[in-house]
Amino acid sequence: METKKRKLKLRLAILRQMVTLSTGSLGLVAALAWNSLIQEIVNNYIKEYLTVGSGIVSLLIYALVVTVLAVFVTLQLSKLIEKLEENQNSQK
Image 1: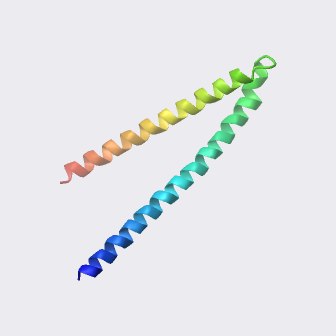
Image 2: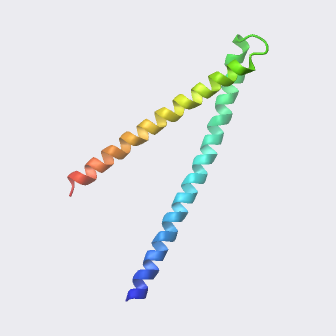
Image 3: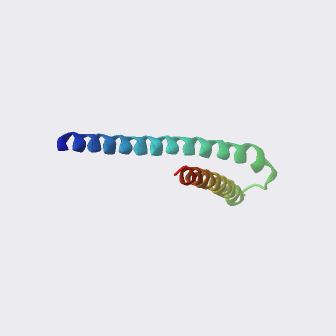
């Protein structure tokens, strides 16, 4: 009986690790896709309004857009976790 429990624990640990790794890798792919999109938007629509040689300004705009997006997503996910935890605690 003890070995069955240990095997089940091991399987669950492996499955959790696989979920964590696949979520992380998919998150990286999504981040790279957003990175490319934001770079294209800055290069095609914003850079034309800046003076020649304004590479630093376009990089600053790009960094600000990425930062705002990261903060927004993080806040939304944090709110979602809070709601789920509240629901879980109220059901106990």
